[in-house]
Image (cartoon, rainbow, N blue to C red; front, side, top):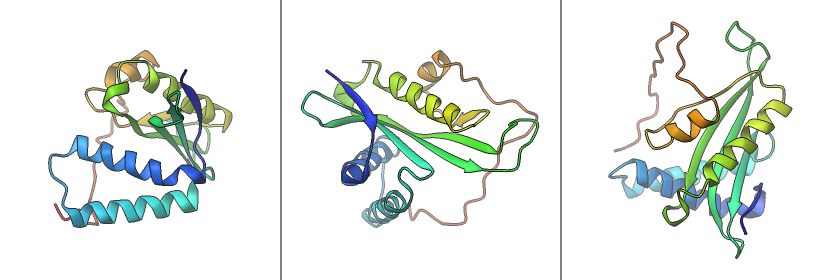
Length: 161
């Protein structure tokens, strides 16, 4: 039986391991120096902000092992016509270890994330989707953002790769 729950500080080491596994799955090569930096920064982030404005929902198998995650970051921003509350919600780090995929775990975790965002007063939830994740997100009602703006990014910290 799969158990779904909010992660706590006792789960930080496992969350860091799964986050790194997700990064490895998305990128062909990550230098050991970059990996070490990612581990250090993510552990620090979780230590400071887990369950404050950053929530990680997990799915655990029948032995209690965490096999899937989905995260929610809540930020206070000035409202706009695109989000009518000051609470901005972002879904991050949706990941299922390979042997547990295609069982609906990501879908259920995202439902929990969306419920938490709604309870927190967010008027919308955003995410960046991989091609593999798009069918899950579309089932939940997500659509491609088209508000006349082009999403642009300026990297201020080089990844080292």
